Image (cartoon, rainbow, N blue to C red):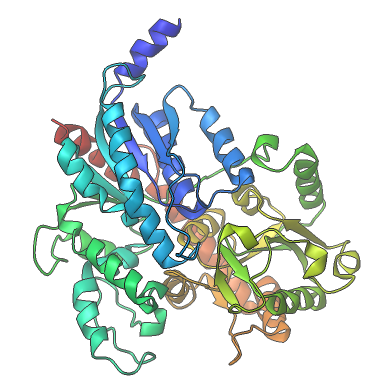
Length: 496
């Protein structure tokens, strides 16, 4: 039987995938890998690193891989030494880690081409957009290189526009002006402040600009969105006329690639006790009554900001489930992302004294991390305080949960503009001049989403978009399903 299974796996087309660090990148790649295996008959090697993955998150990934272990295997790269002089978690660290990983990546890809492997030789490499330097590796090995953009079509348009945008920003004196007059297919005007935060870190910006200048070298681009969500931008990208010069690679709109259902698997969270605690508590709450609060796998807030949220939740009288990983150092900014070393802290050291006991009948605080889709898909959840990461945005849409938008870093500000002003599926909290969202502002927006007229409107809008997302993935009929099939046909043909 084992020999028969091995022969079967050797006949599957074999794709290697290399996502960037962070659960917002890793999980879409994992879900795409599962699609390739279960729906399209591929074998997948998922190449990962140990940096920026907690033991809890690693256990969640391992549990998800186990289901498809016959055709997906994980290949973990050895620990990569970046240098003690570079701050862990900074853009410079992220850049250095990626560049240093390329030598190890090449070794592993050469190994995967050898005859004694469990799968047939790799026919393509699908990397994250931040791993564009893999083009040098795949060029030497003769392997077609694709990227999977785990962000919006608007962000991909931004990438195509980067060389021109860089020239525009160079002469701009006013960082808040309406200076972005044209991104391909993006009809809504954007300010510089709405653009990805990487623009404000000069060395990282130059590196990212270099990545964008290589888009024309790719064999193709897989994009995690769906046509009905961003129709104008998708149409502009598919026109093939978005690069100033050079060939525009084929673009395949295949989203939403999200975990559409989840179970609270004991292997995927801390323990059976935590599973029981989550499910028991959620099961006791009325439908659409719980506000879920989470700022993603990297987003952290200051202790002062955390206390404002706690006070706002307490005074709002709303039921809530809050995933709280920790706080930023006291000397740092009021929000952002930092290294894993400062993530885990005692909750009672940062929450207001007696907070958990006062709200115990209607609120639950979970330290570290929790399976988000299992929470969003629960009928008791009716609002989502989110950092507006793209993965979280798509999951909110899929499950029809209105968004309370609180962008922190990366392209989240851009996503927020579309969530609030274009799609009208959420309301935004506003920071004060001190960079803090006050408890009164937070309480007001939460209550409006959960009880107000504006909340009823965004709830209807996001449920309508969720239905369109499902239509896009309909077997043999959906636009995204067919686009992925076309991508895989082209991928196999390109491998020759």
